[in-house]
Length: 340
Image (cartoon, rainbow, N blue to C red; front, side, top):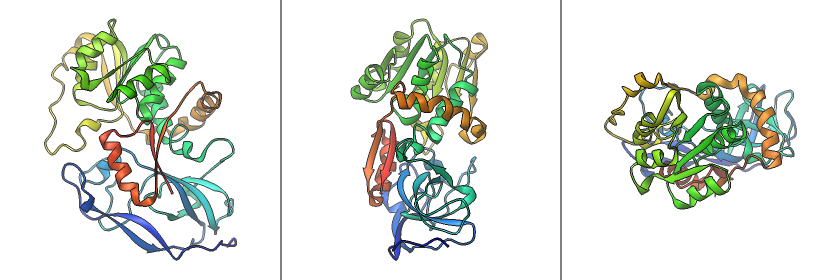
């Protein structure tokens, strides 16, 4: 085993105590202390530096059957993280290396070498491997280009456009020749960001009036692609503005994640018959074959400043839960990151 620097005796980690009903409450969780583990054969010990909190984690807090197993009660939760190897019992990973892995919500994690992806802190800031160059970015890339089959000249509408995924979707569409890019967000500050910094052609605050009316005003000639992060009235509005052959990629539906009763579906689905439109859901996990292509194409845009990104950084493991709740409330601009 590689020499281990002096480590604290305990690591703090977040446990799920009970499954939330509706909005998660602080009493559903606990920040507990656990002994810092030692890596076994083929493993490394990682001191996490940045943790990711994401909307999909709300689904894992429920017991309902889904595409990923629910968090176990009384045990530490999981999520994307990037950190420094502080002890190694694995070939190819040395103390001082930085890795991306999926054992977040804790200060220290034992990670199998096969589950750790080495990243270069000199090529890009470590936090970007959780966002613009990580799973978030790949979600935007795969959803727009593969699921929604974007092509040059398409008019694109993105909901939750100031979020980590949405902001990247709109910019990739613009860089690849969209005829028009429209975004929705929840504040005037975010609307301004979309137009003035991210280069969207139009954006609106969905709180200012009916989404359908605002979308028609922003896209009078209709839309060819809708990238859905919100669901609800946004999905119905997009169907109403869909051009012939339009495509809708469903990435998330944050507007209904905390509902205790099923949300009503769009009332205008019959319009898909007229437009020959299609709606398709997707999961980023089905598109990791695009990872190298994604990084090869997007990293230069990030380096040159052609593709801009924002991060909302919350300091301290003790604030991990509040950061997650902030994502559900829409407090973040861009990727929500917890810095340890």
